[in-house]
Structure formats: structure tokens, C-alpha cells
Image (cartoon, rainbow, N blue to C red; front, side, top):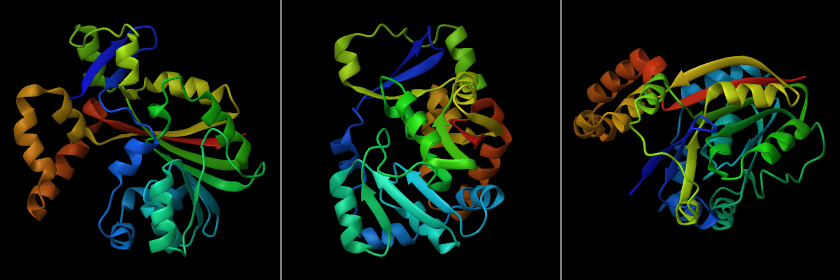
Length: 265
């Protein structure tokens, strides 16, 4: 069972549950049909934001690529995309079932690429899973992106709703207990802190986009969780349309995630 704590020093939430190591990720991405899972995804959020910020044909790295669906998607839309992930068994399966994809085993803290290798870098919910912080990841991002290149990065965030709950003392306080640390899963990060850290390390902020307001509200308001979970899991088209509309309306209040777009300077 997942528990959230508030870290007053760093103004972030600490999620305790399943430790997000490489074994966890291999199990999380277990698929019966890898090729179908990779190819069935179409995400206008990913495609649209990439096309707005990176020229067609640009070379992109996805750091922490999971099963490789976004590598496939971006290649399909005219980008030269490479994926890297630390879940070794998952990468091996992708290489067997989708050998045309350039997906490699590796660590986002120590990337096996030359300086200034990429026009863009996508990071989908990665940096928040490292208990000791993301400084090494940020440094590698800056190293491999060429000057003027773009970093697109999503992370769980301290929404207005989460900040209100923290101010009201609705979360237990984080105390760095060793047993809890062993079960660390992720942070929900303060967006001002993220911006300051990246701007102090060679990036310039281009845009901040909160999103996934539906999930943020569902996960934070107990009496809404059951009906909203039904809508969240539903496959009915009408329910999914309503969910997206509601999510868009409330995303600036209860966003679970934030997209940050930075340019290397």
C-alpha cells in the first residue's frame, strides 16, 4: 500500500510503497505481446510537444524508455529516436520483438553517448524515482544535448491541491526512517525548485504545462477516489471523453504531472 509523506525541508511529497529498482521496472513492464504494446500507442501529447520544439528528423534520446512505445511513436513521426533504460530484461525483450528500434540497456546517470549528441531529450517520469536526487541525471542531460537543443521532461508535481493539503497538515511528515527509505518509490516535486535547479545548470525554461488533473484529484480526495477510479479505468469512449474534459478543466489545480520544456544554453 502506498503512503505519502510531506518533506518540509524540500517542499515535496515522498511516496513510499514499492521500491522502483530495475527488478520492479521489469515486472511493471511485463507484457504478453511486446510488439503490439509498443505499436498500439498514439499519444498526441508526446507527438504534439515534440513537433513544436524539435525539427523533423532531429535526433532524440528517451532516457528511461520503458517498453519503447515512445521510441516507436517518435520514429514513426519522422524523428531519429534512441531509447535507453536500466531494466535489462525489458530491453532484451524489446530487442527480440522489435529489433528495428534502437533501444539500449544503460543508466541515465552515466549515458554511453558523446557530448552534444542529441537535438532533444525526452524524460517521462524518471528523475523523481532517485532517492538521492537527480543532479547526475541533469548533468548528463546537459552533456548529451547539443547547444540550443531541447529537454522535455515530465514529473509528478506539488499541485495547488497538494500544497493546500500539506499546509493543512494532511500528510504525515517525512522523517527519513531507514525502513521507509528502503520502500521509496518517488517524489512529487516542487516545480519552482525544479526550474531553479535546471536554470542554474545550463538550461533556460521555455514552458511549464500542468496536466493529468483527473488523476491528481482522484488520488488526493478520498471521497472522490472510488467513482473517479471507475472513470479512470473505464474503456467506454463517452466516459473517457468526459474524463479528458474534466482533467483539462482542473489541471491547474490538481495536476498530478507537469511537463517542463527547457533549452540548453
